[in-house]
Length: 155
Image 1 (tube, rainbow, N blue to C red):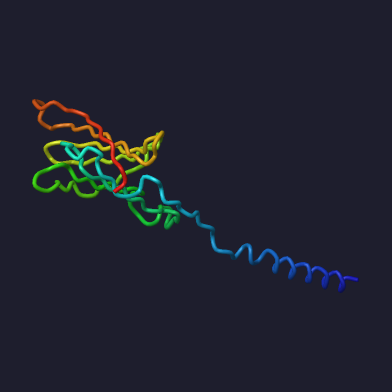
Image 2 (cartoon, rainbow, N blue to C red):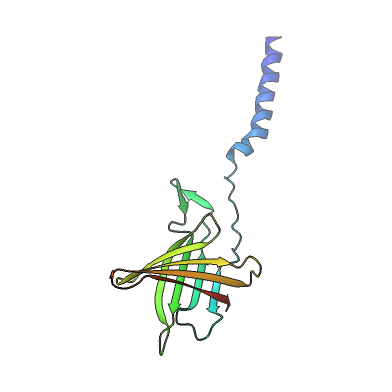
């Protein structure tokens, strides 16, 4: 009798290993990133703007974790701004950014003489438009800080 129990136990163990084994050895699942609607190249709706002429929002999908950190490393968002200058627009370059709790994309530019805080958000009523607010904080206390906003459409 002891011999038949060990055979049954052995069969159960093998069957259990066949059923559970593949589950235990399966690769970890990864979430798929969906391209955010804000991502892309945007142009100011006012061709005569004295502020930001163009803006690019770039999203990096970080749906993996490597050594406890999001992968690929770096911020999930990047913002590239071109300000209105003559004869060519001024390239503010690309900086890392983040999404705020209210859904806006937020970036900070340090130009030395001033810091510019840029917030971009899709229009809730018309998502084909991007609303961009910038706050300029001058280092020189004699210069007045100011804020301005513009509307952009996809380029």
